[in-house]
Each structure stands twice: as structure tokens, then as C-alpha cells.
Image (cartoon, rainbow, N blue to C red; front, side):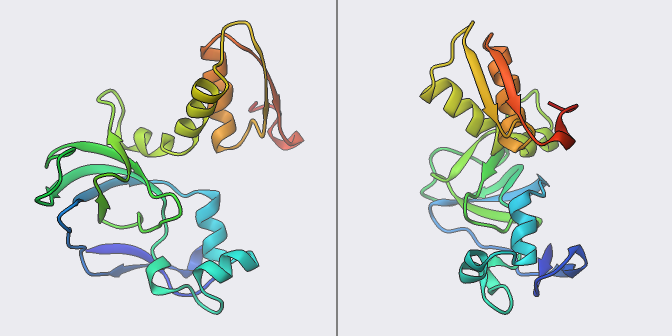
Length: 191
């Protein structure tokens, strides 16, 4: 199978299309054919090896083999399910988040059925679903579940032009809040 791999830190030119081994599912996993993924700020920071913390996690001189395929969020179709899987079946269209895991810049990905994965809404394309995995889910959780947002409330969104912030602004407006967005001057028009 094909994957986008980086074996040294640097600019986008370090990314290469390579043949890699197709993953094999375990009893509690599903094999997903990846149709869409994203390029996040975190992916770019990992590719560059920007911080000491990232070098400690990923590898000091070069990225460790298990981190050489970037990507933390994706959407696709389940092609196979392990014999202990109960929540999903082949043919299910899903979207998923790897959290601190990586490996989504590839044709196939295995995930535990209890991982951060859900059925893709039928009215969304695979591209749309992959793009809302982290930002929209996080914003919705904190506004609805933690803040119990209500119509008429005043809401301040700090970082309103970021992945979570852009969704937080839209979700807060949807719930009828008056929204004030904070962002850098470069993003004022967007917000």
C-alpha cells in the first residue's frame, strides 16, 4: 500500500510517497480504507521536529519508525472487522481521531473499535467528515457538555481563528449566543 512518509525532520519536501506494509487487524480492530485526512498544525510541527518535547516523543535525530507516517484525523470505509468487533461492520463509513497517535497519511489504517471513531454522518462527504473530527468535536463537547451553552448568553472565544475556535464561533452562534472572538490581527476579517 502507499503512504506519505518522512524519515528526517524538515520542510514539506521531506515527505515522500512510499510503499509500506498493509496493516493486519487484531481481533478487536477494524481495517479502514482511508478516503480523506487532514494536515494539521500538529502534523507540521511533528514533521519539522520543532520543539524539544516533540523530539523527546518522536526521536531526537530522526523520527522513530512508528511516527514516520503523520496524520491524526481521517475518514474512510471499514473493509474488515476482527472477530471480536461488535460496534462496526464492513461497509460502515466512519470518521476518526488518533489523538496522540499518527499514521493517517496512508491507504489503510487499523483502529481498535473502542477508539475515537464514529459513523460518518450520511449528509457529509469524506472530506468534510475528516475536517471536523478534532475542531468541531472538541468545540461542541466543551460548549454543550461542559459550559451548557444557552440562547442569549455572551461567549468569548479566545483563538477564534483556529481549528477549535472557528467551530466554537459557529456552534455558539447556532445555540443563539452573542459571540466575541479573539484572534491575531491577520485573522480579524475571517473571525
